[in-house]
Image (cartoon, rainbow, N blue to C red; front, side, top):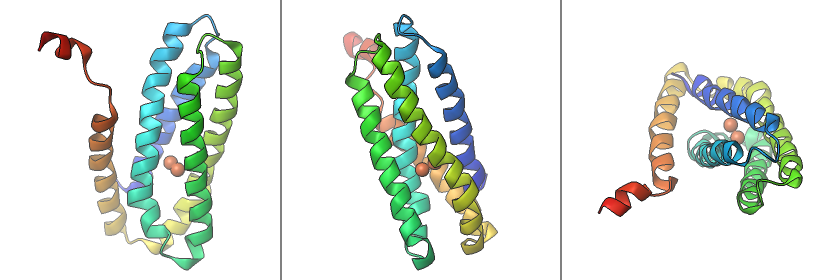
Length: 159
Ligand SMILES: [Fe+2]
Ligand SMILES: [Fe+2]
């Protein structure tokens, strides 16, 4: 899978989870927790690996440099909001409002990547390079996700 399809796969999954989360109410604490925990880890890993695999290359191209820094800044803001939401009471209406704002930011960012960055990157990357990047993205994402996943409590108790 090339880098564009691989990133798009993550984006589509994120869009699905965000839609589900937006449909939850303050009373659905358990569902919110479960969905958000997964979403948060997946987004953090997505951003970090995207930066290391995709943006580190684009940033070196002067034509792409400013746009890339803007995108990295959006990652930074989104990661911070994810962190804030993580410690904010999930059973409150404010949580839903805050999540709405965060999901708008992420939606906008993902749309921009697909509509602006992908066509520009296609001009810079050969087909082979895009394929290799996709492979690297996939492998690294698995490693990063595994590294930031909370330790298995059952396993710990059984030790
Ligand atoms: Fe991104
Ligand atoms: Fe992305």
